[in-house]
Amino acid sequence: MNIVQSIKMLTQLHHHT
Image 1: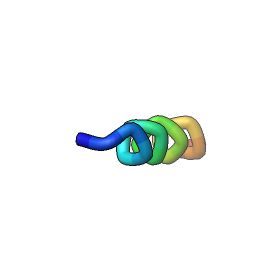
Image 2 (image 1 turned 45 degrees about the vertical axis):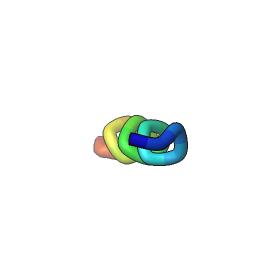
Image 3 (image 1 turned 135 degrees about the vertical axis):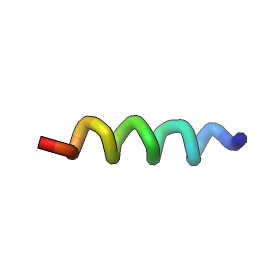
């Protein structure tokens, strides 16, 4: 897993309102 992938996943979860 890459750092970008981790951030992307985190951002997706955070942007899941």
